[in-house]
Image (cartoon, rainbow, N blue to C red; front, side, top):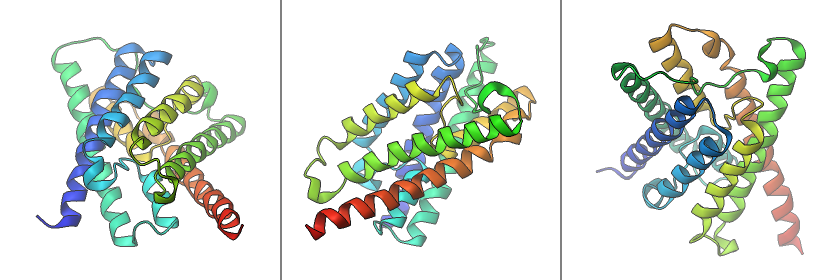
Length: 233
């Protein structure tokens, strides 16, 4: 099998598992702070040491953008990764919510991301964008550092990344539900539309595409600046 195709399949599988398991827990528990945060972190650890050896386990367009901007991948790879992540996330969302519906299991939430405060006004939108930019910047900045070959932390990277994702979820769940991942937000927004007929999440999903990508770009800039200074010394 072509190498890029293998990577695409790995990214699709990884994002599928992330949305199926973590968003499934979020929906079933109504976004329980500890359970949801831990599940997102544990999924990343599990995938990092499985599909990670094939594709690097981005399973997030924001992470892939950070890698693109730091020249760890080319544009073709980036586009293939993002497409695979969106497809995998969509399949995971459709399956997990479909199973809940088939089993007639009452959910406490829908695992979607919404504007801070639940009101689409200027303050809520700005707060949501800033929340996601900052949280994604933290997450991607850590990833870029712990996966740097010069750092010598590659064997422990999966654990560090999983703990960081848990951290940003603990901070952000009660604000936006924590996205930091456009593929995850797109998946649950469409699943809510398909199974609940609600369009609220889909109408707001643009925030959870733009902000994580902006946060990833900021993380890449910080990484370049700080590493350049370090190398210069």
